Image (cartoon, rainbow, N blue to C red; front, side):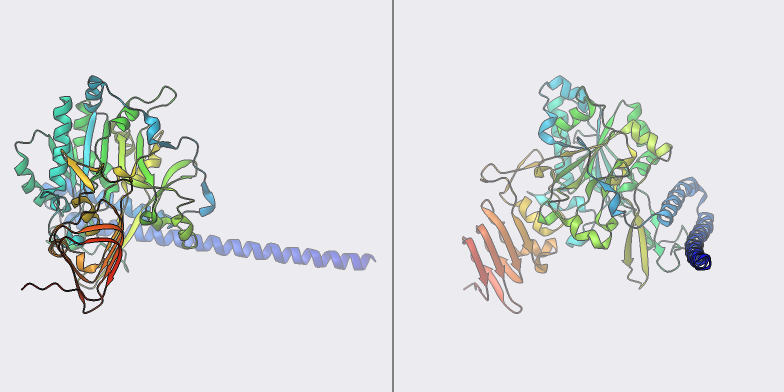
Length: 522
C-alpha cells in the first residue's frame, strides 16, 4: 500500500515536474521571443537614427535648426510606431462614462451680444488645408475647388469669418495649416483677399520622409534632393506640434486667445458654433472647463468606417477602423453598438496644448499608411489623427451635434448635394433648405464617369432639383439636361456601350431608368 502510494505520489510529482518544466520552457520561449523583438526594434531605431544623422549632415546651414526639429519629430514618431500595438485589446473597451458625450441641446444658447463678442475675442479658427484635389481630378489645393456660385471652400470660409467679425465687432483670426503640397499655391491665392477684413495666418505642417517598407529606412538620401515623392505630410495629428513650432501658438496666447476651433476646410458644416464656444469658455457650474471637445454625430450607413469614441484604460480614446482587430470589424461598423463617429470638428485649449506639447504628453496612435510609388517602390507613411489627442487632455468631452455640422466634400456626389437647391447659402454658410420637408440628406452614388470634377460638371447641363430626393444611384454613360427634377428613389443605369440622356425638364419620381436613351440634336 505504501509502495503503491509512493509510486502514485511519484507519478504525480513527476507529472507536476514535467508541467512546471514545460511552463518554464514556454515562458522562457516567450521571454526570449519578446527579448528578440525588443532587440530587433532597438536595432531598427538605432539604424534609423544613424540614417537621420546622415540626412541632417546634408542640410544647408540656414535650414539646419528647422531640419533638426523636423527629423527629431519624425524620429519620435518612428519610435512610437516600433513600440505600438497595431490593434486595441477588444476586451478592454469599457462603456462610456455618464457625461462623456453630451447632447448638443443640453449646451444652451447665448443671446447677449457683448458676451458673445467677449468670447469670440478668445477664439482662433484653424482650417486644415494640406490636402490636394487630385482624388477629384483637380490640380492644386482642394480648398480652391468651386463649391457653389463659383465660390471655393476658401472663399466661403473667408465669408463666414468676415461676417462673424462684422456682426460682433471682433477680429477672430483664421489660421490655415498647409502642407508642402499646398503652401505655395495657397500663398498666391491669399493675395486676392487683401481687402477682406480677416486676419489670416498660415503655417506648414511637417514634411517627413517616406519609409521603404522592406528596409524601414527613408528612401530619400539627401535633404537637398529635389524629389517631393520622397516626402509626405504626416496627417492632421501633426497640427499640435507644427502649430507650436511655428510660433503661432505662443503668439495667440500672448494675444489673450484661449481656445482654437479646428476643422477640415472641406467640411462646409464646420462653422463657429456659439453654443459650443460658450460651453468650453463658460461651463455649467458643476463642470470644469474641458481642455478638449470633439464634435461627434450619429452614424448612418455611409459612416460605418468613421472613428468613434470609446473608454479605454480609463480614458476617452478615438478608435479608428485601422486599430480594430479583424475579428471585430463588423462589430465596429455596427450602428447599434457604436452609434456616433468623429466629425473632426475639434475645440482645444491653447494653454493645455502648450503643456502637452512641451511636456511630451501627446499620445496619439500611429496610423501606418502603405503606398505604392510610380517608381515601383512600396513605402509606408506614419501618420496621426488630430482627434486621437483627446486622451492627452484633461476633462475631454464629446458633444453629439446635428448632422448639419458635418458636410464634407470627398467626392463629386457630395459636391452635387451642396451645389443643388437642397442647401441655402448665406454669407458663406450652407444650411439645409426649409423647403425640404424632412431634415435628412439624400444618399447619392455617382459612378466612375462622374469621379473627376470636370467630367461631373460636363454631364450636368444644370444641377437637378433634389428637394424631394431620398436616394440617387447613377452608373455608366449618363447625361442630364436642364431643369431636371429627381424625387424619391431614382436609379439610372447605362450598361456598357449604352448612353442615357435625361431630357430637359424631366421629372423622375421613384423610377429606374436603364438601357439606352439618346436625345439627338436636329
